[in-house]
Length: 307
View 1 (cartoon, helix red, strand yellow):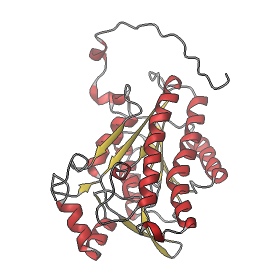
View 2 (tube, one colour):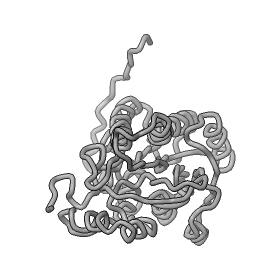
View 3 (cartoon, rainbow, N blue to C red):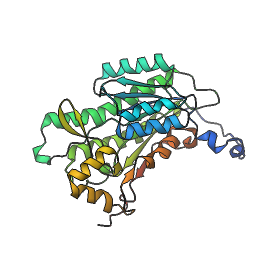
View 4 (cartoon, rainbow, N blue to C red):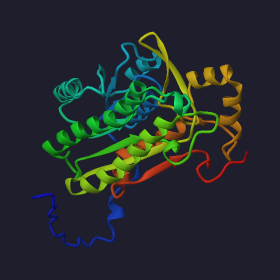
């Protein structure tokens, strides 16, 4: 089509009383749907996996780590299918093979959450090219590749019964896409999350006629530490979201703990629970008319700081 998109003319469907036919609990249900979560073996990704399972969704978790957080085992208490896949979001061939395996195991993909990422904290002039490239590869290309593979599968498969839309994709962006993180020097992370934010908006428009919605969530700013390949890295948690590792970080660097707690107008650090309802909303039919939108969960810090 030489770069042009041809959209079919739509006929107005007049049904002003459709709200009477849709129960709100049913709208938020993910029963029978399969949601893929990258970076889901711990941190925010794992919490979002619990949210999906709690409303009946099956969960396929991808992570480069061989061992998940012990809480992963608690997902087994839900009456849903859950499986962990070791994969690499920066390697398209490996990632494609993982997505193919997921389709073979689950039969379909109805949603994607991209929570894999890293957040190096180092002064701009000290950043090495290979380290910057790694941040961009994981945060931007990893998001791009996962979305591309999920979209291809959603377009191939038939929608579920009583569902007219083919799927929903949610990127985990960051407040760092809007403002610099106080107490941290995260230039390439900020740039990468800006790219993720723009990608969500562009894909939401491009994929709308395919029945695929694309949105993003931008939590506030903190850091999480984890060990990988015998080196200490900061995971993609430039957000005010409380986890075991965030609390350890706050104890090690008290000035960051003070920022996380006192700077947001709501005067507390965010909890991963604060994201669970939102991810269910964005993945479910409750948000069927929502796409290309970023959702800020920052305790108000995106609007202004108290300190």
